[in-house]
Length: 354
Image (cartoon, rainbow, N blue to C red; front, side, top):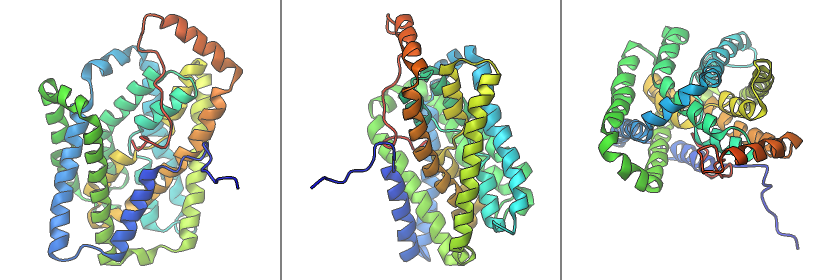
């Protein structure tokens, strides 16, 4: 008998399974009373530590080197923090026909979070695109998102978002920005340690996010907000997100061509400019939305898995383009002395959370 296997083009990220399992655990055994206070405090500490590690990992020197390709990075930033939010605002017209107000707020928040790093690199590598550009673009987006996402949320969500207030911005500064800056300042002394133990610290990253998800969904269960979501509403949300992803993928690809970018750069723009980071978005939503965070992060969780599946298919097809072999030969010739332009090898679905 033929053994059943998951198709290589369908990357069901194992971490998504863990996230869904955590949501199920929160639904069956939500933290209440003293346990809720403990998990809330632990979640706050985990978020701060998470962004401290982000700061300690980001190489300022590498980021500055990437500024030489400023047109590409600016294009990705515009897609991430301008074009995406415009579509998010346009989706307001879907309330209440397709989406409820809380689901719309979550969808709008999804359009405000930064791009991914690891998955952008992995898919750009598979498609034989400009990997160094993808690395820098993802890093710039994550760095800018720490400041831009809360500011955009304040301006676009404002007082309409349940649980959102000026205090949330103060919490963002204290829980996200201050730890991140501390990590940057201490990177000189701890950067080597962080790099040496990146696998172990990666588990800490993911464990912290699982704790944030459990805390957020426990609070949602305690307040009964899940009664506001029906299967039809979820189906409508998936449909809206599918259209949003398709539009952004087409816009980044053909828009980059119109701007005069070559094939390798267009690939980097498409994969970095069309995706949203679950790793950055979940902690931010927890701080910004408080007890309403569970509904706020639901659209982001669904969009994240959708983008992995669709981009994996696109990356595989891009790798088989006739132009890909020519571009690869050219880059290998330019990188004969071991330059940073060599593609980073990786497969989607393993470390593509961010």
